[in-house]
Length: 308
Image 1 (cartoon, rainbow, N blue to C red):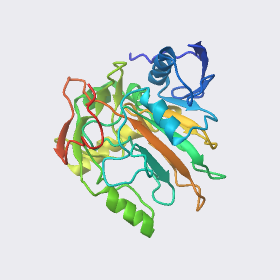
Image 2: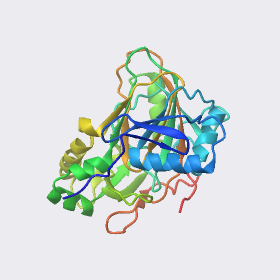
Image 3: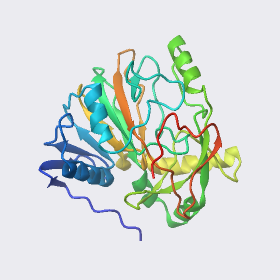
Image 4: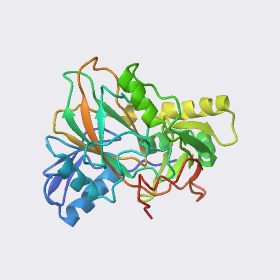
């Protein structure tokens, strides 16, 4: 029998409170100002809470780009805004604007898994929030792995998948969206990652599949799609999903190594703007100790610094 990690209903660490908001994923942090100076023990305990809960929500943080950058940098070196030609905020090369007029990530994905070293974690800051819709869903891939029947877990442990930014994600049918797509595909990346990733900090196993996973190594496209879709159904079970209902000024920190997220296109023509700052990650490692490798594109050194 595979046991799930035990999470307290709510607890206090380093002078602040962690309040769970989902049975398997998500907690709100109360008593921490992410825009202010953070002591090392606070950062340590926040990182421990991130490992336990996968996604942390800071309500009403009201950060600026500068303070968001400073907060994210406490958890590791930062990446640039994006590996491809997608532009950053003017004068802020590490800040990615997520503008609903340009692109709506209306699919499940893990950020930038098409490069060999995907991010460790991301911060999202709510700036312009629609009156309805525009939530962010975050799914726990470690919990999904534990949900798998034993025989399927044993199969998944052995599988590797090709991830690419040219995986046919949905985009808006507008001139701005067409231009965004051209920038997104300016460089084609293909990287091979384990379908089950061993978390570099916790040692926890989790599925590592998402919208960028296109084909399993050694399988045809149709065979790959059937297996990946089956695994994905475990990831997006309602009990594994947190729904973040934004208010302006909120900040979310989520672990990119064992989650997926989804921004539903359900807010009509209302404006929506988030800013993302991303923390650099290491090379994923599979159950057998094998490491991810590059098939196409460059090493993305312009985007992400190496992390041991």
